[in-house]
Length: 159
Image (cartoon, rainbow, N blue to C red; front, top):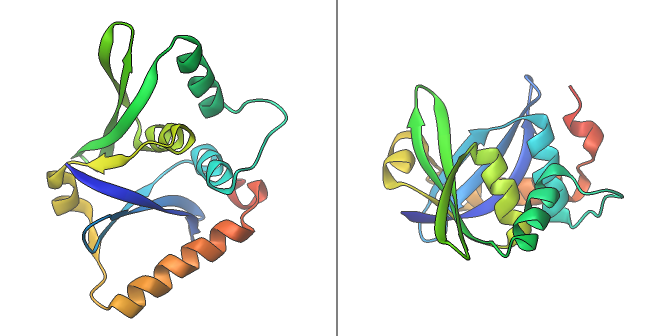
């Protein structure tokens, strides 16, 4: 397993398709995962610390787990099969460790709220990651994502 850092969420034009971008913490590979608009908004809100009047679904998940004394430990992007990414949320609680299958977008939204690391299986990175050879270009892309996060609104993800 390779630890990843969440670079951000953006809308890929011209299709208006949201993507979440992850990067190896000790390497140069990036892992882009196309996600839904609702999950993109949820992740962006969590990254920006946006408080909503009522809990969003991923906030509710964290609240329910907390009420059950279950702690999210990490999430792992486990597989890429037929163009679809798969993930798991690993938790511990009164009965020990529990692993729940999840879409990566939901797992990442939960991880951001729980403040836990995101990992990917080496095979997933080998198959789906992109490499930006030029370090300056890489930094520029990361800065673009950070600028996007500073200006994103829920309307940016509207269909």
